[in-house]
Length: 372
Image (cartoon, rainbow, N blue to C red):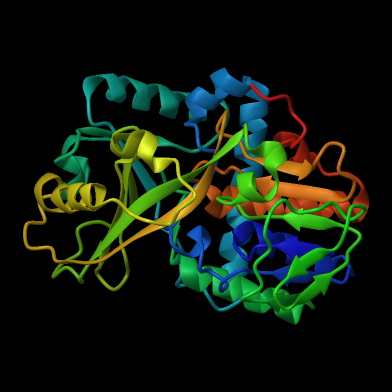
């Protein structure tokens, strides 16, 4: 088996394949955790990119409920696995507050919490003075999903890579593969360091998937997401992770006191759709103003700025599974900014599909579903 890309999807897939007893080579173009899997906001959220109330309308209530339930179970698995692998302090159950920044959004937040309750999932409304002071500045009502978590993405990915190697996966960093990636029956996979011939090839590069497998170029778009981090703050301002303004802004305070914050992809607009890993000075400046002015952290010193390239799918769900008409070629990508948990589920689903011939989870994100 050949897996291309060492992010969360590729590593979970490779490790699962190895645990089925298969021989696995993983090719990573740079270093493990060097892409968006190690450069994101560190949210471990159940569900897909759409809020559950919207997912019910878009996918149908039953499919949305199944998707949320499967990711909720996977979330528990990740917490347990992180503790088992000695990275429990890097993957923490802290809860997520989705705070409304307007009256319109407040109504949506309430419907979101109601939809979760109707489908049997935990959620509660938090209002007014019960909100942390920094969050209170943004809005007065929020939905708390206490089961959600935060992670230190680079450390978690490197921990998972170590576990994959112990299970028998051969990881080759500095081994880029250029598109289009061939199916096993078409030719071998070529890298600067050698050639790989495999019965199955899995392309798990979320942000680069349109370039590596052009079959999906009309359904997944590469997109840059901006982040900043501050020096450690003198006091703790919150314990959980926060989604604000329809999820366009998101932030958390790390255990060492630093605040990490991302967002304003709607301001970046069409410029955000790029396969080039360059950031916008305008968006970074807007994030700094957000930290100082809107969160009230006037003395916060922004020390780091970066971007991660991710793949955005057309309906908010990733494309996962075998590529139609390309026997032995599989994809997973298009997580639309929420790949930390969905990517983990997707990777294991593809491995199960390859090893056993079927996977219930692949059906949630079928790679052969019709565009639109």
